[in-house]
Length: 220
Figure (tube, rainbow, N blue to C red):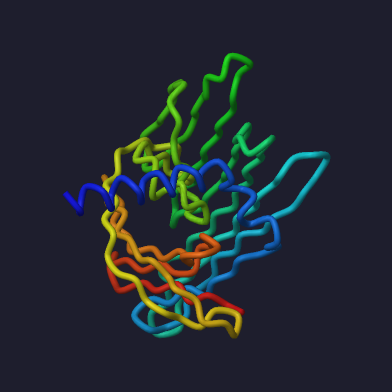
């Protein structure tokens, strides 16, 4: 009974925060991580927030390069841009160089509120339309904890996710002690541990295993 009550209250609080999922980052200009693989720095992940002509633009830039004996054996670079109007996503575009593959994802919304998706990865194409709400896999938005209708930002690949609360931990972020909540987000080709600051809902951490142990370390 108490477990059910806690889950219900937790869901309500997250839903209330969802209405301001853009606004809770309104005082942040950039979130930047160094990416480590097996304790070696291999790249970065940047999220930049900007206001333009009454719209909110969020740009992402993800890059990493894996080397063996000083020689590059795999390189990944993805850039994307989300455009929001009154807290609603109206456009998203991304281009990704994933090794030898070139992936993309394009999302637009029509006047009747229907989203159109067009993307590709590994020779598979994803082209469809839907009026369902979804969480966009660019990770900075805590909507990934609430909406399990997940769309990969690299390819527009749709999948369902399951979110599990893992732990609460105190960390020092920007010279301040903050409580961070950690969750596991799991679905097809997705299995990450992600952390959001409890009070601000800012994205502050991510870890996963994929041909090595990957860790995102937040820069000041």
